[in-house]
Length: 74
Image (cartoon, rainbow, N blue to C red; front, side):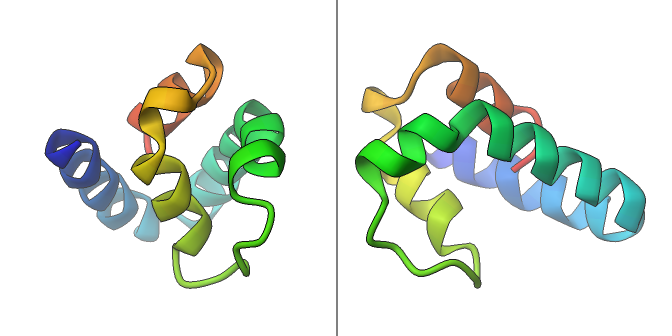
């Protein structure tokens, strides 16, 4: 779990330098994790990284596609 958070922080810092890349990564994450979000984090208010944190906190319940998307950049 700690490695996922560290990777997410590193990816966020890297993507912050390139807004277009950040938008692309958010799109990938949104597509890969939509069903997981609806199933596990539906009541979480967007913003401030709350949805990503919710998904990370429940990483053992995520689909493989969502786990991959989270590990690649958010």
